[in-house]
Image (cartoon, rainbow, N blue to C red; front, side, top):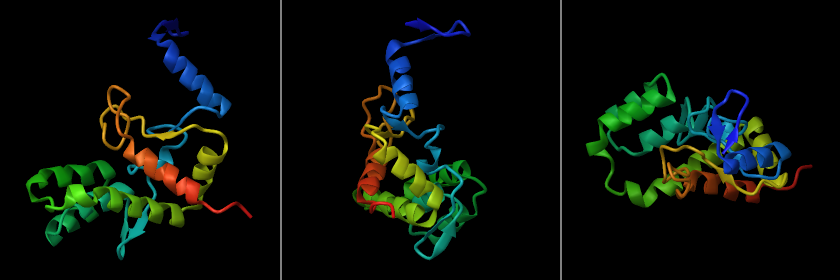
Length: 172
């Protein structure tokens, strides 16, 4: 453990990761950091499937349902957190094929977000072309979309962003 200036302790692995990020050679974390624009909760509106969603999280949560009333409530939610809360209130009504299609849906939404926001593209180019090793949703809460509480999660959202970054054409 290494003592920080404020007398709290941080593990040596965390210090090394932070140093790599500062040097531009480590992972590109995006949960509440420089690459936050990759988060579904970031404030980038996304036009997807004929609607302009306040955030990617709104679109993703709405995609879980076929009931138009639930979809509308999610659409009208005032924040990404509220959109997720509305979806959780109706968890028993999630479409039956959701587990089969959720990765494809997320990729569609991320593609739309990337295509519609030059800043997101700029950050993705930075993350993918400046020797960052991975793009990681470093949320301890979600081992499916991020790295989870033990840092051994599946990081599917990070993998989607890495795939999209690899597909970017060279800059002109």
